[in-house]
Image (cartoon, rainbow, N blue to C red; front, side):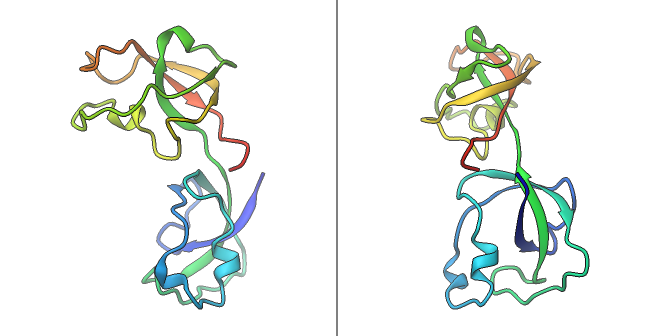
Length: 150
């Protein structure tokens, strides 16, 4: 479902993905709060279009101002247990990983997903980018459907 929101002009390009982090203390008293703070905190979104005719509005958070865009919840690429990695199945993430230098770390702790959440697999992408899991997990890289409340 498409939502209209305001984001920093530097991010306002179709295809840009971001995780909405919620309200900043600088938002207090802003006249555009309702247009900016209308997404689900912690969820991943993709800019699908820039609103035509919209002007750049001043913003205390974004140095170049904000502009109106259309966004949709974005799918999440993640590593999940291989024995559960089937298109259509519902899975949870395996848990935190302290190995931040691993090429799979961004998929083991994907932005926009929570460890206690359940997600439906939309497609199986294949082998994860690492050669060996230092936590001895058997993982497969998949694409997860955005949560319903995104």
